[in-house]
Every structure is written in structure tokens, then in C-alpha cells.
Image (tube, rainbow, N blue to C red):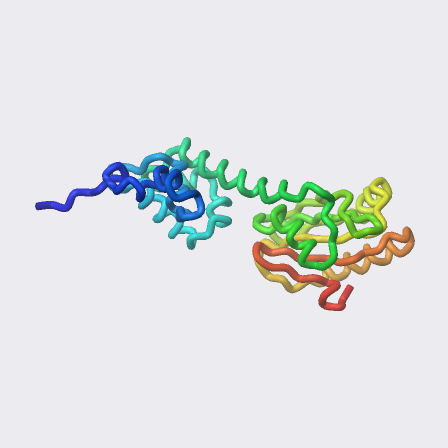
Amino acid sequence: MENQKITIKQWAEDDRPREKLMLKGKTVLSDAELLAILIGSGHKDESAVDLCKRILATYDHNLSMLARQSITKLTAFKGIGEAKAITIIAALEIGQRRRLSERVEEPQITSSSDAFELINPLIGDLDHEEFWVLYLNNSNKVKYKAPLSKGGMTGTVVDVRVLFQTALEQKAVGIILAHNHPSGKLKPSDADIQITKKIKEAGKVMDIQLLDHLIITEYSYYSFADEGIL
């Protein structure tokens, strides 16, 4: 007798993702089970949970990596149409925005790790370089943060005049620079070092202190201040 595939509906009730969430709470569900709730169904050869396990395995069980995939990449999986792909992308984007909105008060920067936690969700997983500036008051609280420029895979152009114009508008007394390296390499380039020196010297003229420059990757960072080369 051939083995028959058991669908989610045939599972014990407390093993079905939706029912499991209601009975045991959201924290007990695996990533695959949570994704299965989003897509609702699999296909004739694969349950929603098994399909989601396969998708996650493709991206090393890394939700950040999954969040970067396009609709075209996701619809390449059998059982994932445009509607399901859009649902997955939207849900992961909501998670990212929730992380960003958790800081209601002006965050105070007391260390390079504070700055990293603030800026990493914005540029950590981009496939191109972006250069951002944090503008701080005299309590080291972030008054304003904004991108200064966007570039390609290997670099971006920084307009120092625009940087300090914004700093004056915000009445900032300190700034922290940050840009990402899509390559994942944390070592500063010669260009990184030169622009840092240029901004530091310009800041002295305007009495606006350069507090740090961070190179950001998805999971880590390099701090010019921590390394003593600021």
C-alpha cells in the first residue's frame, strides 16, 4: 500500500500552526510554522509547513536573507504565487518597521554599539552603499538622522557642504557618520579614511564635533572612534 501524504488538516489539532498558536501562544511556533500561517496552503505534493521549511533552508534559515528576496525569486518555489510572495515580503517588512518604531524617545548615543543598533536596520542589508549622518544635541541624543548620499556596490560620493548645512539647521553639536559595505568587509578604505579626516577638520571650524564613523555590515560594524583612528 502506497504511503499517503498527510496534510496539515489531518494533523493533531495542537500541531496545526493556527491552532497551535491559539492553544500554546505565538512563541512556540517555528519560523516555518509562522510563514505557513501567512501563505495558508502548500500544494498537492507539499504541506504549507514543509514548503516553508524548504524556502527557509534555501536561505540558510535566515529571515533577514529571506526578506531581501524579490517576488520573482519567491515565486520560483512551487506553491508560491504572486499573492503569497507579496504576503511574505509585506510581513517581513512590517517586522523590520516595528523594530525601527520601537524607539519613541530620542535615542541617546553612549557608545558605538548604540549608534550601530540605530542605523543597522536602515542600511545593514542593502546591496548598495548609503552614507548616513546622525545629528546629536549636547546630551548626545539624536535630533535627526538622514541619508547624505547613495551609491553603487563599491562607493558613494559625500557632499560635506550639505552635511554641515543640515547640521546647522538642526542646531547639532555633534555628528556620527555611518555607511554600509555591501561586500561585508569591515576594513575602511583609503577613501573612507580621507573623507572622515575632511569632515572632522570642517567640523572643528563650525564647532561641531565628529564623534564617530561607523562602517556597517548586516551583523557587525567597525568604529573609527573605538579603533582610535578618528
